[in-house]
Image 1 (tube, rainbow over the protein chains, first blue to last red):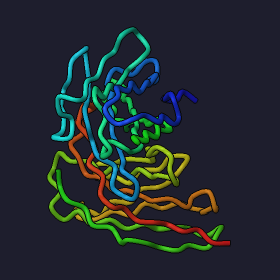
Image 2: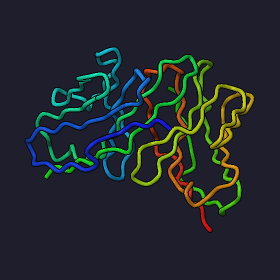
Image 3: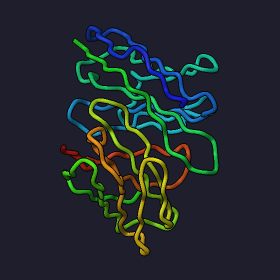
Length: 115
Length: 111
């Protein structure tokens, strides 16, 4: 069964450093998303991406965040200068362009620990 | 998107059916009911969705009341691996729309 792949599974970084979280969405999907989940809290939407541009972003997704689809398979989330409060699980998701309205499919996540 | 209300937790015996309720009394005509689950520390997993008819797939069944103000997710034969947080989400069926997760229902399947 096709799946969304995220790397690394765990990223440890120092406050102020840049991190790039990587995702390989399901191959025939065209919509891509990032969500995050701080430990013990709800899953929160960050950004959606389609046709090489951001479709929607939340208030969390400020100028420190950026997304990119550098090639035909990868989808990345960059945090320019990490803060302690960026520590969370980051989930990538993708969905197909169909009229069936199927759900979004999530990766296993990257645990980001900012020290 | 319409708001949903779910019980914070439920227990179910292994092998029995798990029936998870969701209230969405303010749902509008073009909003669908989606169910996801999150097994501890893993990414959310899509389960099923529906508009007004009952739906069934290999994972679960979704029963939506005629007035669409509530729904029930049914796991017909719950196993220990079904222990997870289950989220009921109401949203317009647009593939680019974000998912808004609430607190969900913690389902504990016990042997």
